[in-house]
Length: 321
Image (cartoon, rainbow, N blue to C red; front, side):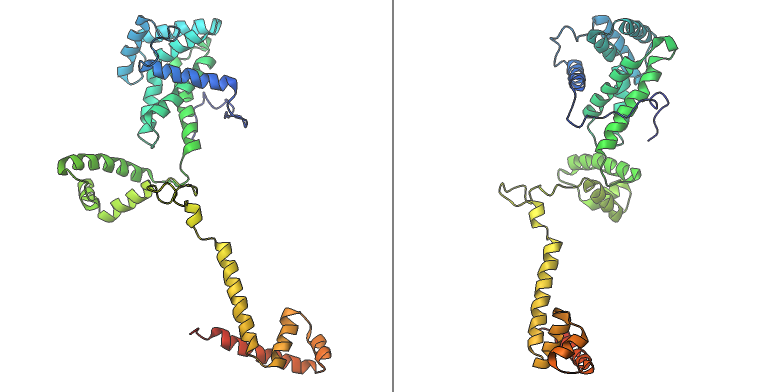
């Protein structure tokens, strides 16, 4: 996906090979704390709680779908200037509280286009918002919301890119499946039972075959692990990998069976013909070497080889009783 011009100059960022660095781990903890405080889970931490006037500004901004109001823009600019002069966790968290509506708007937009939970997308969006706060320069004259949205969107897109299913489903199918899930819940309440595929297809105004294809494609887009249990109701059930046939083992087993049939067919031939075939195809002697070993001519060896192969072909292709 193309990224906005504000985020193009940023290098690709990802977790280091050895895991999260202390700085990234602290950033993730701050994001979790901010979101928990938003829901009232950590309201007892005074250094994270915004003052009453900031709560009023945030309440004023969020109903507009993330568009900042004039008082919110002024307060954000004041805090950004203070953060630029003296960065602190307290100022950064207040800025996150003030502009949380930007992350909510982007998370809600992407939650309707994928299967990831809204809460996870919101947390990732807040991390993008924090990066925008740390990189914003008020002296350039840009609005903070215009600067922050590409960071929030890019962070969510990177998250979805890393977690996207290898099976790509058409967007129209995804929309049909999501609409069908809502219709299924409504019909379940009306009928007091699970609606059939035919009833869902009629409610969606599509054919039964189209709905079944959409449902199967969306339900099976996530690959299963071979270590997953074959039966969820049994604790000691075998894994899927143990139940899958091994093609190499099957090929080896078939080769062993073919060799056994071949040797059984060789035993039915005349002694001289069988001996010549063993010299030529098993010991890999030339016709001249076989002729010298058995005291016969090379022409006789060639005739015996043709005779033996024709007899083996007839024996091996005959149906097994």
